[in-house]
Image 1 (cartoon, rainbow, N blue to C red):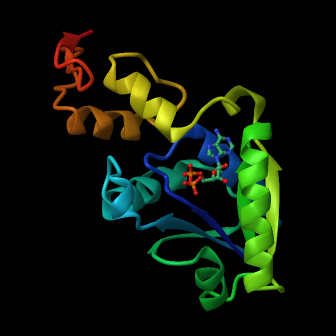
Image 2 (cartoon, helix red, strand yellow):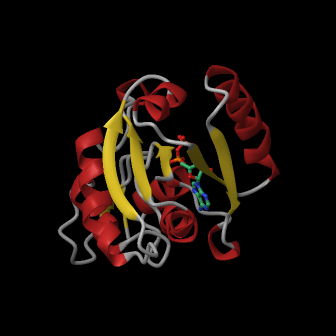
Length: 180
Ligand code: ADP
């Protein structure tokens, strides 16, 4: 049984994450999308909301026969991977800026759990600039992010921002004004 975890904040899930899942899942028998419980980072969505969104969107992603699970976790990724008897940690790399951080994490995780390999996939070129943070910033300022995040996630972001989904203005949390 080849089991991998794909850990991240997923605050929120983007099409970039889904692209990594779609391309990496067929390499494994089972994959656990592992949602980090990180309330100290003041996430837009609670860990339960993030897990729920991933669960709802996942069936629309072809995973090549790989069984998909979604779980919240706290603490060290390497320890969670060991507890779940995973043999791999999947991560995505978008740009050189991701590389240094990911290298440090992969080396530390290998030191903690030498038998677990980190497997990197390069971002799809159409999503290589997509990050959860950028999506939140653009959305909150009234910009369009359709096609870059799943529709369900866009809807939930609208609900968080007090939108009625009819194109009415969003509150601009940066300036206190309303924008379209
Ligand atoms: P974290 O806070 O752990 O970086 P993220 O949810 O931001 O969590 O990202 C989880 C993983 O998905 C990371 O490996 C990140 O590099 C990768 N990732 C995020 N966005 C993209 C994208 N657009 N394309 C490819 N990989 C991505």
